[in-house]
Image 1 (cartoon, helix red, strand yellow):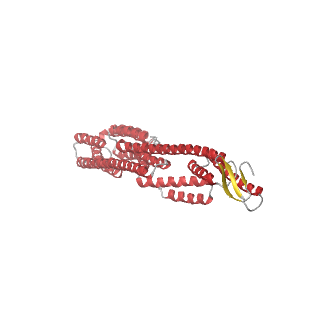
Image 2 (cartoon, rainbow, N blue to C red):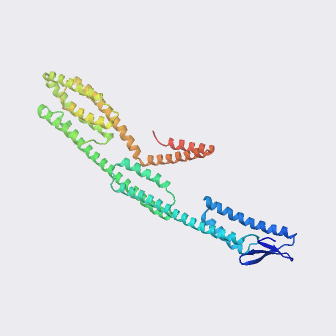
Image 3 (spheres, rainbow, N blue to C red):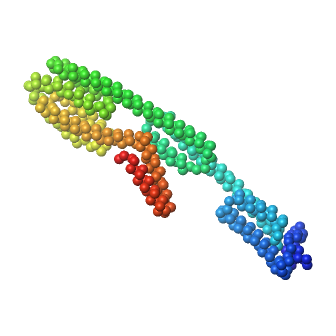
Length: 393
């Protein structure tokens, strides 16, 4: 017999609780001490199980809801448990454990709810930003880059339920599409303007070719200068036709001024002086720093204006000077076109998609390297190389 139970003469095993004795089994396998020891071990097993639940809850390793459920099940089992020990004390421990577990479960539930609310708010903020970009942004490249960055941020935000996430994503996708349409309309408008400029310059060329055979030197010279002013004011046509249009226009003017130069040979001295002035302008144009294409273009415009305003030069040097000036202009134009091509490539949606998939492959490679898995690393490196090969230099 112990303080917590006994085995009577017929082998019935009893446990003592605050409610009195309760029969928990029968022992016929040996002496009473062995039977009592057997049922005490059962009690100790229950104590060990409770201790494990307490430690897991305290350390945070156990899920509070699961712990509460297990504690409740153990608490219910004590009323019929075939174990010998202080079951009342063990019941009190389980009641306390159950209370703590329920409290922590509530805290976890609230934390999860808050995390979900924060995640939803974060995605709502991204959607609002995208919708603002779609409505009013005009920095096309920077805005396109920002929309791509929002996609990456979106993927990092977890914990939003599928229905809410889908609804928010539809709003974001609609904003992104609206921005794409507005950007497309903008550049379509620019293309239309360039088409109009081409038509204007075609008319100026036709007029210059008509005047190129005139012998009314004074009036025609003024008319040619007016045509040049109109040419500059017209703006630029498309990159693919601007140089051709200029060559035709300049050729028509050259024809006239060459004829006039032949007629006014006495003006050779003045033309030689003009030649020196143009050579000085050309030297400045050739020395323009093209590392900053926009600044170089601005500097070139001023020099082009100076160059065009200088009077005519001797016929035998005219082409050479113009060729030098055109070469200097082409040098600046090439720098501007290179910058334009780079910007154009970056706004190309196909190239943007290729770059986005390359970024995903690079992120996967980084994760594989952190995991230290050689097979994953090799596979990820191969994917990055394949994605990179699809993107033109």
